[in-house]
Amino acid sequence: MDERPDWARRMVEERAARGWSQTDAVRALMARLPADQVVSSEQDLLRQWKRWEAGESQPTKYRSAIAQTFGTTTGAFFPERGRRDGRAEVLQVSGMDTVDIIARLRASDVDGATLDALRITADRLCCEYAYMPADQLLLEGRAWLARVVGLQHQRISLAQHRELVALAGQLSLLVGCVEYDAGRPRDAEATRQAALMLGQEAGELSVQGWAHEMRAWFALTRGDYRGVIVAAEAGLAVAPNESVAAQLYAQQAKAWARLGDRSQTEVALDKGRQLLERLPYPENIENHFVVDPGKYDFYRMDALRRVGENRIAEQLANQVIRAGTDFDGTERSPMRNAEARVTLGVVAAREGDLDSALAYGEKALAGDRKSLPSLAMVAADLGQALQFHYADASEAQAFIAHLRELRGGQ
Image (cartoon, rainbow, N blue to C red):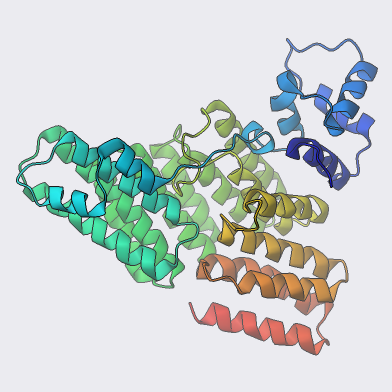
């Protein structure tokens, strides 16, 4: 059993994916060291690198440069673990469970404890996006959105009104995402527009930025890649320093990769990486509307798969699955894991392993929690690889037919 830290194993995997020797990796690292991190010699750093890969010591002051060497963020390479229990936090902070909150909402005025509970409830719902069945989350999200909107008819201060509008915007974003996952694009677009207006009314740049990000995501899954770039630019103009900007850059990178422009793909990915490096580590990485540094590996995986970087895309796919799976095998991020398995299937198909390609593809499509438009878009890459390499294989053609059904059923 490999007992080395995750970052040590990843250093080896990242290096191997690029075909680098340890000396190659050290030279790449030295080229990215800031001026104040002077090393005595390449050989000294090489000795340290070997100890890092063995897990014998930690590269404390070199973490950022190591992450940059491999094109990712410090938070992704050296993650800070920890999850929050949203339901428990509602009780801890406010002393109220759902029934108590609803009772408070029916009162003639709203106090600080009730607003705290609403904030944490909205946060909990956004955390449950990754794994809760879409129909259940949609029902609960709409119910809480209606409750928050209803409060505006009660006696509240101007500050409370602004906060309730912002909460309504956040819940609208969530509902719109789930509607789109469930194959209801018209409902999702109407909800997205409502979220944008609520964000503008409340002056919430993050809500506005995410509304533009949703527009970019919708365009991406429709194949409107120029539309992705335009929507992302609109979001960046509104919220250039919010964490959503990193996801906007990621959506641009995905679009540029599908347009065949590798240079622009790399520029967009690096802009997002640099932004995440400047921002503090998120307080709650489980919230769907928080761009945690580790999620950037997921974005890079998609873009690099599209531009044909098989080895690096494969390494990132394995990293995404590890990061999205608990020690007991429970998947915290089933939708990300599904797309990672599609990536592994694409690489297998390109390299002549039909059985593995189909096995990865079937497992990706079998999950209960999925975003139909996103999964269909990514799975189309696997279908194209199977069609190109295995046009005469009946099992490959059967899987391609399944993909067509999935795409047509959105």
